[in-house]
Image (cartoon, rainbow, N blue to C red; front, side, top):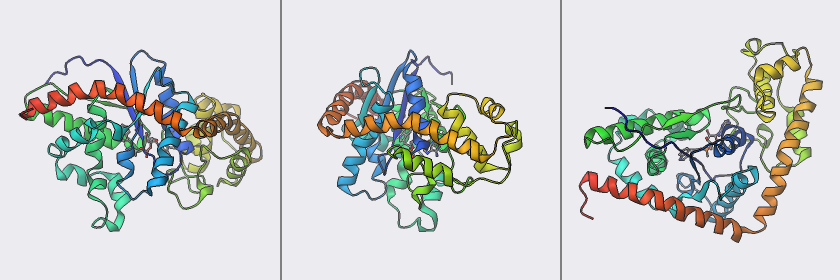
Length: 338
Ligand code: TYM
């Protein structure tokens, strides 16, 4: 089936479950800001309906939703230029999500590694929503006919599943209706690792706060966390290949590269032969210089939650204008009497 020309459109989302980390910033938000500078529409969503696939205290969910929106804006997402909103305000996500539950196959869901990791041995007791999560994510993307989806590496499989769902829908109904969305996974920090164990991803839910940098950490905390970050006794080599078996060292170089908008090769060339006593303080200073203005702006925005809500509500109206006609056509294609 040939793909009709879809207008390029960017969509991505972040779950408001816990605070934002440096992984979210470098793997996602910073890249969203870069993509906003391009020519196409950009939609950025606080995916609150994804958050409740695991229990969220209602007040925590409200705070986290506003905090993610504040994080977007403080990092440079301009609500006049991008459509910024929270998912539950646009009902097309849930509606199309249901239609896709009837397109996606159980076998596809069973292959999702993130579900297996999250459910662990407890798979019988997790919510049905956690299992169906990737089909709601496909709806997020396809409700806008989005073609480009900037994400960190951990979301690649979900975007690939979105392509499978689009393909099956198009095939089953003999249409060229949904585009093949492409995951955009670029730059040196598409998988920021845990500061205490370079083989694990940095995540909001890790056990110890020392494992991650939170976007709201102050300068002292950032410096302390990088100082205590696990490394090895060797100095830095002069090329990235020599870091292949040194995950913690590689992670810190990648973080430095992403924060300073350089390639990791450029960073390793600059710091070749340097010990951690030199590299870690330089990294901490760089992180503080980049993150402090963002965290102060986030605090300023969080002091006025009504303004954040107004911005998300306005964004939702614009999102709805795009999603409703697409949803309507999907219903018609499937034979619903409307
Ligand atoms: P979430 O909320 O877990 O993470 C949001 C974004 O941050 C990226 N990310 C990372 N990147 C690099 N290193 C890390 N350690 C790291 N941790 C998180 C994620 O890859 C993601 O891009 N299912 C998604 C949210 C979602 C979505 C969507 C994304 C729902 N619908 C539609 C794109 C399009 C999630 O849970 O991301």
